[in-house]
Image (cartoon, rainbow, N blue to C red; front, side, top):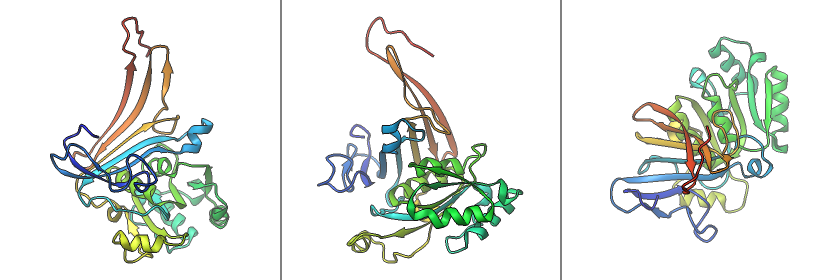
Length: 278
């Protein structure tokens, strides 16, 4: 980022300046020359997944023109994410059964054929019970609701929705990807700690109960979204090591160009006898 000709500002990063030495909220990045850009990063989304070797850990960056990404505080967000076919059919204030029925109708299938991803947390006990009562299937995950949200917007992943409460910064990053994928999302901030509502007001959020869509969270007309697999996932393979280098799998999305690229890269060691493996 330091070599890129942009006047960039980190709007979602690794906490405040006194909590993180790099990529903190408010940090200026780039050469200072070129377009004004807002940057959102999650250098390792799914730290527990990476530590345990579980699937779904990714490194993520989203960029947009200035003001194109919501400056979300580091708090929870209630979310529901769906693919393009079900976009606009769900609402956070509707019941779980109503939302699942709406998704099923858009997909021309039964509720029992839907797969919903939910973070495996005690706070989701009632949500899990409601989904099961409605008849849909559940895929519980330990971490990584950002990866799950992206999967819900891509046909062929056998994921039809993501429901529950996760991180607000991850919600903004998911919204940036959903803008590029034509997916749909609703989110509502959930302050749980003292001082978080004051932090929201300081960041320009006057209505903490507002329901945001993917366009509200990532309103920019130009959005780039990039992610690389750290461990194996639905869309990307994790980092693979061989004798003289590593191999990575990435995805790059552009809203303006309406283009999604899957990139498979071999990084070879700088040695004269390096052997490349495919």
